Length: 133
Image: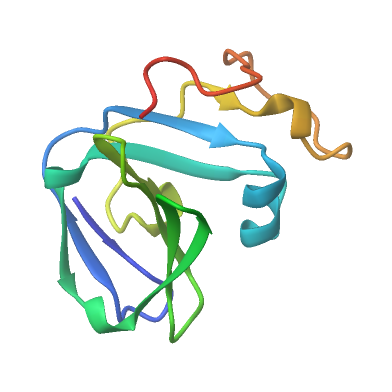
């Protein structure tokens, strides 16, 4: 699969299938996405390769060991990386090809935007399920 930011400056190649995919409703995801949630897919770190635009990637450190990557040209949120995790979360909206894995859960539902209403019957977790990370 291929993925890219809005301006096309940063491009990724993805080998294999996603380990998991979900919707995050935490207040941080609401802030950086400007929406009710962020839709992400987890990949083993070795499955994701930056093929173009690494120099355009800027990082915001949420806390030690956790950072979010953005495109410095168009502002697209790209990745959420945690040092101790075996996986990296990429925003599914970046995919140029159809995803092979649809989201299968919601996380941090206690922080959900009050104006957001559930439109599916997926499992909902107050924290991260054991399969994430």
